[in-house]
Image 1 (cartoon, rainbow, N blue to C red):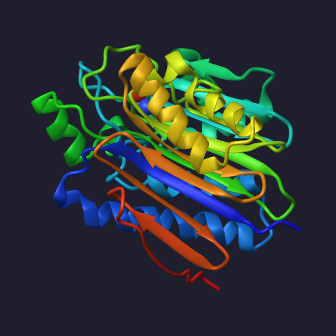
Image 2 (cartoon, helix red, strand yellow; image 1 turned 135 degrees about the vertical axis):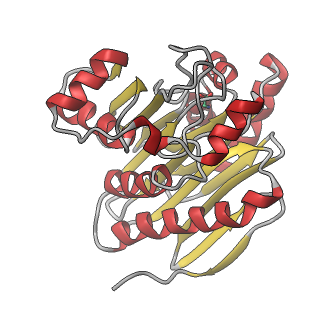
Length: 300
Ligand code: GLY
């Protein structure tokens, strides 16, 4: 039996002072939701989904409710999930009018022979699967609106990686993308090997940051490749992000768990909201050297 571990991130970016407290609470809520699943005997896939749903529902994060807006003021969300036990993946790009894109990505993985559905086709698939439609306005947070009005690039992406007691690895990532993006722009998040990756024989990764740069270096798969060469989760995270910065000038962040439960987390942005839960303890922080921890208290 393996020790269950979950790690989450709520985006690598210059998180303003007035959002830090809520962001930290959101990270802890997501970790508790995911760890509770693992402690109750649930799978890594279920834990990843539970953690991401928490962050998609939290307007402090750029995913689901809280998604940043396109240049035209619309919501276009991307999401992916990957099961390291089967190497199956499901993802969606440019979806709107649903609360939890991670659920739709899971349905793509489980109910179709495809990996990625986008735009109108993805929205039609959501309808076919009976996913409830929500008003786009219900996904727009005051933070996202403010960033759009100022056309400032802010928020970025949520993600989770887990290893369950059976040693199965899963990863998931979800985002509204980047503020004032061109309508139709799809970032790294729904692309396997870029926004995330999971392989039971190595570990799992979820990424955040400048999508165009992450795509160019296939950041998530680069990290698992480095782990295959013998680097630890932490060493691989640092090396791959430094490589991305040096090669294409892009910044970002990652959370990583190796198949034996080793945690890696690193970022080349100002801050990254992230945390992990392991051996009954929860860890979280936003600045590089700011990691707090306490015993994890779960609902009965
Ligand atoms: N990393 C999220 C995006 O660029 O869309």
